[in-house]
Image (cartoon, rainbow, N blue to C red; front, side, top):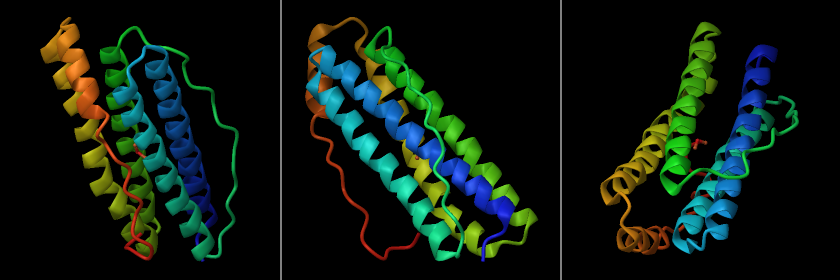
Length: 172
Ligand code: FEO
């Protein structure tokens, strides 16, 4: 059985993960509107990953005989100044999510909730990847500067990103 405090904290994180999905979906729409299908594809995959994160937490609360509570999801921005600004925002967002995951683990440790601590370790590793994948695109966008050719080349590269659904029954 999960404690009320931990349950509330993970429910809040479900909301944050759903907001992340919403944010990346808004970024996908922004890139679609700019004719950058590869960038849009990257964001679509990112949205799907965020849904996986939210559902992992949803399933965890249920597995611990808790109660999932879905809260209102804030509206994301409509547009960004440039592809670079969008990816910088994505990277910054991921650093915020990392901080939230760390706080959840702090709470699990404080409560001696080993099951939650163990569950959340998956997200620690995932956040390293999340930050890295966004910052890699930021770096590339900075390198290509104002090169239209470079932008289209990167668009092609990002168009190859594929969503890989998690293996059923895998840890966390
Ligand atoms: Fe669910 Fe992008 O962290």
